[in-house]
Image (cartoon, rainbow, N blue to C red):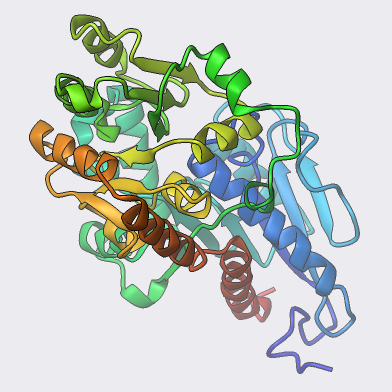
Length: 403
């Protein structure tokens, strides 16, 4: 039996209660921060089972503004959902009201996103994916920028601890918010189990290529359509590449939903007469995405800034060479397993990196893929979940004596 200072049980035998904001995970078409929130939630759910012994008991209460989607973990011993209505300004007043008035108050409250409850009677912990809104403010709509800047600032100020997804972003948080380094924990994202397994469905690459009118070998981009992803420069570089007869048959496949300020991307494709060579699929099912990814000549991410870059790890794990910018966290994620765009603001630099990956010999390609497979194994949702719970338990224990 574990002693009380290492378990989730206080001196009176009461189980530790961890509260979570589950809204970021409770989204149908998950990307970026939604994926992070969902995967961390699933890992904590798995860990909840092992913490139901009398000496280590921990309970989780997940707060939502709407009913949980079917793929969220099901309720069980130690795992409960609490639906709070209405949705309006949910983190600003509805959630704080519940936390302040409830008798069954959590020992610690965890938000797998930037926005903590405006008023929180217990220690709060948040997760910050990146600080692109501070480094590239012109890449955001004014309304979104105002909320990101102000709500993140108060959340950081009140947070007992902060999770982030790369060492690079940790340094940014220290720099911009003057937060002590020991108050920040890096939990690298990983790849979900379903993405590691061989796709078992009737979906074939031939069917998908026919559906999306892909008539040749192709490069692939995966991510939301937004300014900092640098897609306009990628398309300009691809246009320059197409002028070379050696690469005139290559297609560029862009997978991802429309984010914001994306109009110029589509206008550029029409201006450069690349409508048949640049394919936009929009947001597609995970199975389809994995099939298209595995058959690509290379994955390309010419981003100006990334907090992590989950698609990079997915591509490496799928055995696909990656071409990524040598900026922000991307070298940290790609290691020696990537071909780097030295200057993503330069069309020439992007084009040179694309040519380099397309000119790889069979042996060079095989070696790069092997490095990518090895690099991808460094990232694990299981380890991220375990480290997350370790920190939450530590903060929850500190609060027990004040109850």
